[in-house]
Amino acid sequence: MTKSEYSTSEFKLLVTGDLSTNEFIVPGPKKLTLADFIIGELGHYKEARKYSKWEHEFIVAKMYHPNDSGIAGVLVTDREQRPGTPDIVRVIPGDNLHFIWTILSRVGYRPSNLGRSCAFASPPSVGQIASVLAEKSQAGGEYSVHNHNCYWYAKAVFDHCSDTYGGNITHGPYCNDLGTFMNDTPEAFLVWFSKS
Image (tube, rainbow, N blue to C red; front, side, top):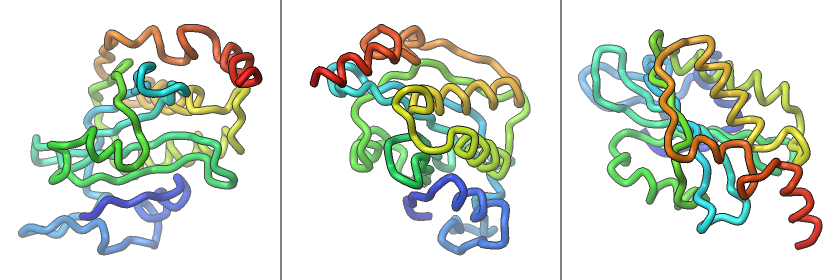
């Protein structure tokens, strides 16, 4: 399995539709595609302030095979000001996860802090998560720094999944920073941005 990047609608079609691809096949005695995996845990992250003036927020979903406790890979999804495709899903295989933050830095993420996580009581399939990501993308429309930004998207995905699939939510030491810009409201970002 190789690292790949897709819009949320492309990802949903690849996982749940007729566009299945061998690109996602995991080597081994039984060939597996992304549709065979479940999401065991979802993390809501925020880029560390000293590394990022934007304090970007994103979601990391840990994938597992239903019959194996080992992590098979992660899905990283976020929302940025990308015309026509504000929301992106990045697929990162398990064999690269020893260096997850090195890999995330290569695709544009800075050192980040876990704000909260949810270990699901009823783990959803990758297909179910793909549907949620596409649904939230459609609900958000084009990126808006005022309301449909990365803070909104990460919160909408996390809240929907934790409510729907249940489980134990753990608050990290940076939980209170989520949804804020420099510990203030997102509107403070607009004031700061207009001055810079």
